[in-house]
Length: 413
Image 1 (cartoon, rainbow, N blue to C red):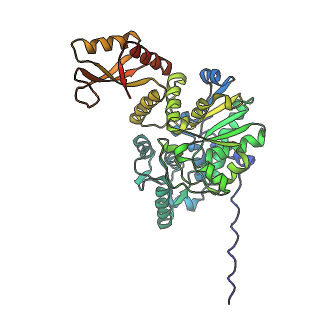
Image 2 (image 1 turned 90 degrees about the vertical axis):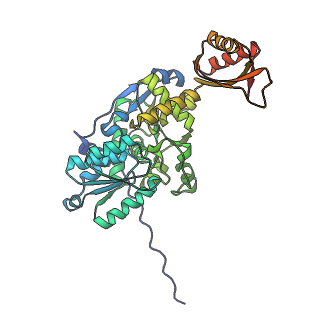
Image 3 (image 1 turned 180 degrees about the horizontal axis):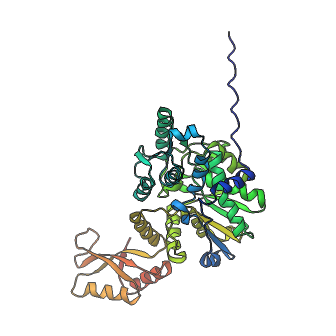
């Protein structure tokens, strides 16, 4: 019997060093901006110490992705540039690739999953790239983009799993330490892990005492299971509004860097993302996308968990205005700012007016009123009233409920 030779060993994933990140910074000079670091008084009060926001939502193209994309594409050979580049992205990487290709005079094609945010698609086209929709998830678009690369010779620009991309994203880590040299914790929104890996490599090389925390949406958290398994493991499904970090499989390079340099991965719920986005709009006057609010969501979930001074990275600000409206409403509901009630009142003239007067006396604002006269739970002399109220938060909502009960109203579950 012929002995089957063993499979050849898999070469280790390329590593990224501090020197690579410093070199990437030189490449980005005059292309990417050093984004602001803003003090957050309201987060600082909650956390019991200084908290600052690293505003990558104010980067060119509206996210950190322009850093890594430009470094990667700028290093292509003349022959590679002649064939153009292709990428797969839900939007932020698409814009980064499109801008870099435009600046370097290279043709770009981008595959997006169906349902990618309209502003991201339009911005990508505005930078001169061709956009093709394919599949439901980013991974589907990546398969199509790789097939396109094989057919045309275009160079596939990975959204996170390439040494040049990680080095480019890591330049944000250099800026963080320069702008907040006293930082003890850095929290980073995490999808595929390019930004987290780059920042962690830079931070740990210069300040190994700083704790680096990756934050994932609970509905698209591939890293916890992958780290437990010791290798990248694909999620079976994903469900999150945070399309910018909805990545179902870590890359080989990013996984190794996160495993070796990141202290902790935490997850946040959709409610937490909504509350964080709303708080950033209200308190910081910052427009971010759900993914960009992930680090702040983690801090709001457990303000005392992270040593201060802390830096929360706002990774992107590209959000569809329609989604922004929905998320703000969701965030207000999650924060107890909306109260939905089903209350029974006597079916007599003035019954509804009395109910609304009691609500008004407690300072709640009525958004919607609906009558229901036919229900098996109602007595013949009752009417059910559905109220949607705007309150000042959960404690105020509880006071409204207490007043209505004191006044004898029957509140239906």
